[in-house]
Length: 194
Length: 194
DNA sequence: CACATTAGGAACCGTTCGGTCAACAACATA
DNA sequence: TATGTTGTTGACCGAACGGTTCCTAATGTG
Image (cartoon, rainbow over all chains, first blue to last red; front, side):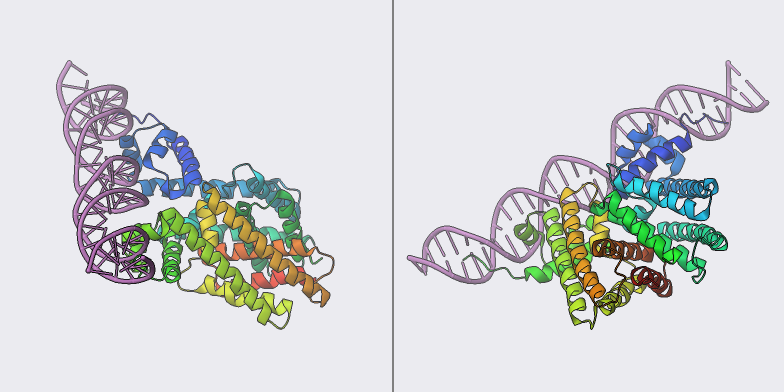
């Protein structure tokens, strides 16, 4: 009952994600209102505060991000191919795209994680889920003989995540797609044992 | 001529580095003034603007950082030992220290690099210098038989840098020292060819 | 000692920030 | 149609921001 909301929450969140991704947490309310196509009162009715809106946007981004990665691995013919697909297309796209804005989740963790325990917690949980997923993929790859057997899948997952995080960071320093591919090749060689 | 400055520029810059490192570019002038032990007029007389102060602090940090790394490699008995010293002590200290604040340079690049071309430029130059240094170390290690010969030293340097950047980022996600060491071990195996 | 020059100190400025509020509009229910 | 409830709107608020100004204090130079 009561007057129905005139905008779609998820569409508004997607717009907010873009703005926060672009400007970080210091995106102003006006930036957000413009992109979300609503007025201040509606924003505060729907989300309560700028920080709540940020958390909702971050949650939506991280969740969608993990879903996308899961999809890539499901569609791939093999664990190794999935890992390469993910790194090559998903990550390197972010690296060599015109605007080097990296990953919204990592950006947020670097910018806010130290002082915002809520953000830090979401980031830790996301990393845990992502590493669990990577661990399963790598373990399956080991069973298929695609990866070395003498490494712990969890350690390998941690390693892959670190390489991923490093690639996204290095992309802000002007790393080219070709350089990124050489790095991926070297990282792969560590998993495949030459 | 004129009244002499009552504070030391470099000491003030070191204090500013700490504040910017802790709070990012959004550290307030009051935070800075308190830490630097000076008044607003003095700050603007000496640096002109908050942004100029930030650039001066970043320059000083990056320069000192590179000097420190160079020192580690010079003191190490071999390239491989130097690389391990650097990663183990330098990097993992940052990871497992109580406050996970990462690297001031990388933090700045992630937070500001997209929109502040001046910051992006310093970061690119620093990466270039750092990779050049790493490349020389790795090439020397290859001559001594410590590293695989079938990889380009520049590619290996890029790889090491990516792993470093990833470690600093992952440290914000709660990576423990032990996990970091496993990652370093895996990365080393990629350079040493098992 | 005068004078030019530069630093220190504190009040002050315009702007913009995140957030609030009261009036009004649109729905469900009765 | 009357009522209760919720969303929308735009004016508004106090606080804090980066930066300026102006006066005073301390130096080198003639």
